[in-house]
Amino acid sequence: MKKKVVFIGAGNVATHLAMAMKDAGYDILQVYSRTTDSAQTPANALRCEFTDRIEHIVADADLYVFALKDDAIADVIASTPPPSNKSLWVHTSGSVPLSVFEGYAERYGVIYPLQTFSKQRQVEFGEIPLLIEGSSREVDGELMEIAGSLSRSVSRMSSGERQYLHLAAVFANNFVNSMYDVASHILEEQGIDPQLLRPLIDETARKFFDLYPHSAQTGPAIRNDRKVIDRHLALIDDPAIQEVYSLITSIIQNKQS
Image (tube, rainbow, N blue to C red; front, side, top):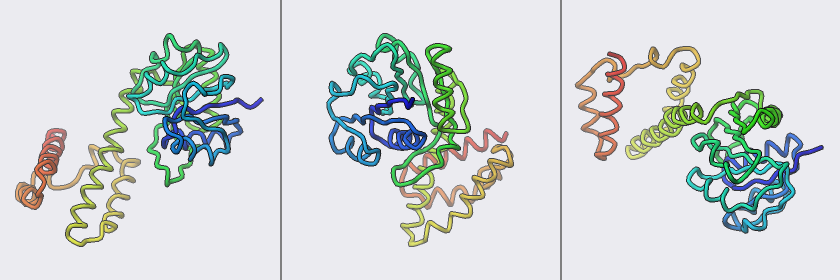
């Protein structure tokens, strides 16, 4: 029997996870979001109901997925109508502990997909690591079954461990992508095509699979090439970007010492 699923949230994670679950045979009943427009967009793609009224969330689903901004999860959980005893509540956050559900649901857990999601890009969901945590052994087993139907990479991970994984992911993805944005802006201001950086970016990413990052570090910081570093700093107009350049240079040099 197909599990009936409600998604509480309509952002990037919710959209990709809901589509993956639909493709895996789950029955997506409804999408909730604070606004009609944001709820309707994924609901149309999923061919399911939608609502912007939390009190109108359907009450007979097997699984409720809270895919929300971290700061909103606790408040939305507290406002959501109580589940039936058999239903399972999960959130998808890397940094919010499992205990956020205590007092609101009897069966609850976490399915954290370790990936960056954008609405305009498709991802191979079967390759995404899914980190699960349940409120009991029975829930753990159910989450392993659900996650295993979506991905070939599923692991159990505690709330404490997951917070460190999320921290590492912010450095490896969000901060790195911000540096791509800075690099693109520097080149665009000079009329230079940022696409020239693509082979460099590709090779830097590939090195991660073959070399430990500490061993793969190159550039003026590790060489302590002070003249190049000073010239670079002189080219930067934004004091905040200057500070970032200097700070990362110091981190590289301190890590290598």
